[in-house]
Image (cartoon, rainbow, N blue to C red; front, side, top):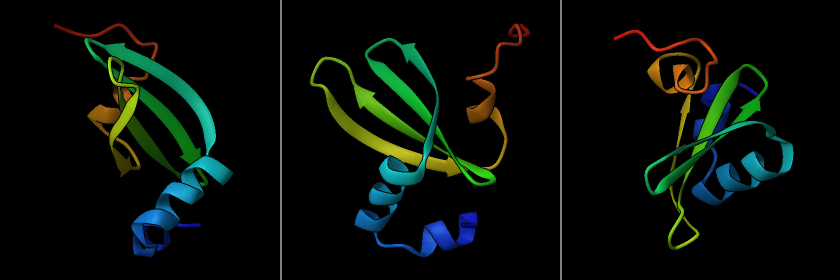
Length: 78
C-alpha cells in the first residue's frame, strides 16, 4: 500500500489499516501525550493518545521528517 492509497481510504478504513496491518515500531511519551509509531509498507503513521483520558487525539502520516526524527535514538541537537 502506498501513502497515496492510504490517504484515499475513509477515516474508518485508515484506522482499520493502522491497527490491522501496521507494524508497531515505538512509543514516545511527551507530557500528557503518548505517540505510538506504526509502519505500513514505506510510510509511517503516528497515533497520538491523551494519557490522562486514555483516548486517541489524532493521527498523522508521513514518509520522513521531524515527526519521524522524534522516534530516532540519535541525540537531539540544540
